[in-house]
Image (cartoon, rainbow, N blue to C red; front, side):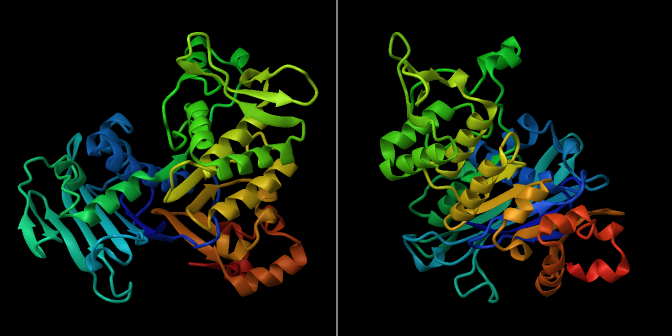
Length: 414
């Protein structure tokens, strides 16, 4: 699980540390332009860099460093703290792990200035054990087989150590970090419209389309592989699949089952569902946007393969209040085994949170970027007794520190 994130020099964020709750979702709120979605983008950046390589994360997805480096900054630093994964082979791999990456802007290019991986085997309050140390072209790695440092020749300053070496038996922590970062799953928005509302190009990429069958253990960032993700879940994890069906039926009682009929020729699978109101199967195209949104969210929260983090940008769109209540419950349940983060402008969502004082982080624009604040638990409890919900607090402007009266500012902690 991702437990902490440090950002310096990425868009509006400078010298900011975000801590994520264990067992509770982290909910990012704040006005437009306060950097909420940028936090999700940082997670997506790290995931893409680990999965597809640094070039893909910097240039293909973002158009180069000028598009995401903070204004006036030539250096960007990111650090991610990850929980240890059971079963790692040596004591050097046990304990929380920190991955740190510093990029330098060199005109239109970005190059690696520093990259380190360290293990806090004695706890976060004690000095860590470094297993990867890299500064520009100089790099060394700790080989767990020989228990010695070994040099690595680096002649590519636009690639990460993940991309340069894959000897997992000698460098298991490197593998652990690479795999963990690649399992940071960020969903910035799903396309849920029916075919009639799309243009020709959008129709060709719709998640409602039949798809060539292949195993896919997680939903992709846009949800376009929904059919394969659900089919893989059905085949690999009966317990999760039945749970997903129960959640759909609880919210949409007329939805009896979901099935995957093959297209003519057998190479593609479609998605269909049994509606109790009709005798024949209904196609995916006959699901409402609300049903389709809820199904996409379920697929993201119940992947066939484990996720270190599941993050959403405003996941409450298109949902009826009852579906929204169920979604918040599902997000809280998922946080027991993955870090769960989402942004929201919905006061109704905030009112459904089990422990809002612990879950909420308030993003606040400042003169030189943005900052992050959290609720003071004691002060929040007193105000919640009066306002009957954290949504009401926000509706009255009490969570907007810059707009609040001085007497109300103790509600927010730096």
